[in-house]
Image (cartoon, rainbow, N blue to C red; front, side):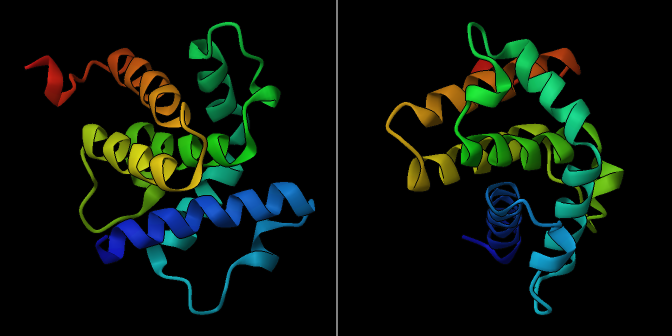
Length: 138
């Protein structure tokens, strides 16, 4: 993974730890965390209600609170970059399809067997909402 990919993964894990521990994200961010990690964590935390509403809209037959915590956190990070690129404060924003690809890769490595497909489906539906197309749609 590239340095930016590492920071995205780290952001998802900070959000996960905050949700599990019930701690503020600011207490969990390591002093050595990169700027992208920090901006993604703060944006996802600040926009949590909006992000969860989007996740819930496409999680057919699933309530957001029933989705595994790490999956939700991975999707929140990707959605921040997809829908709120200015909030991510990245030097060069990642295209929505790239955010989805990276989220799916993290889900493959750290979540259950069906998680990558679930994450991919929800994020692709959100991307369609903003008028983007996935590489597989070409």
